[in-house]
Length: 450
Image (cartoon, rainbow, N blue to C red; front, side):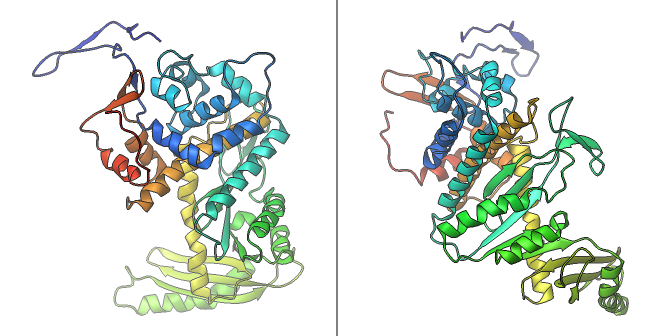
């Protein structure tokens, strides 16, 4: 791409001197943090592994290898560019070219939007399954870096992904009042690492497919760490006999939210009355909260046997709050419920996947192509989350991934290609400098050409 601007200079009446702006800065990048993404990818081997899972759809000579294409697409997603169309200009970005293994000057531009459309639409169900298996293998390797875990907590969740037009698998969901997809996500409840992401039609119930996923995942976990305790923690959308039965058969502990009904409300009524009485007797009932918990043996009509139900009975200034979970754990009721509430942290992980990695931008017509795209967004999550973990290990406070991206990756800079190295000149006053310094502490010394 030429350094000359196609836009006429634009004057601004600023003080103390007038300003003239034009797109004629030459070889600049808007994402000076791309080298850190490249380091994270090199450490994980993620893009290369994903590329090996995707089919080759082209015949004859190809301008771009699948690995370069996957790396370009995932890096763009991690930098906040969700649309395939963004590639039409970003393919010329000198630093993106370098991060993808090409010289900023002299080597061809990267892939364009039509190429990415063909890449994602070439995906088959078998290819998507291979990508999911690769993601699980990555999780197993990275989860074990610090040694054998004492136990594993699996946090499944679902989220909404609005659809447009007549995309395959779109369906209206009354709760969200829109047509959408309904992805199933599974996280490690202790570390926040994304284990898998499965696309489902918009009318799929929250629990659909979770047992199928667990049937494949649990043996892989036990093969990697024989005898390891595994437990499932989920909200009320996963409260189905099929889930309970699987966990009991496979010796998985479980704690799952249970939607209230009249029978459950009667079980919790005495504790709730006690909490309300204590609140009324307090010095200031208008600001006092009394929180109690209890348990009972309970059997729903659709269950084959009784199970333990733990409930929280809370008297709040604004009114009563009663919640139920069904569980196989023996813990005392209140500590158990508090542990269950910790799964709320997963909402932040889902937010990171959707907001920072734009995983709700699945705009292909074919359902399988959108499943492929969802897994590419998951790869972007892994790269950003890896950078966040490196920073946390260096003493930097944990942040949301979109905040991290703005501070670390979206940094403007000038790219200068010399004979034997490339120089990236960044703003001397950029507030993200401490993050660069923190990441540099984990690296081996490298040759500095000056």
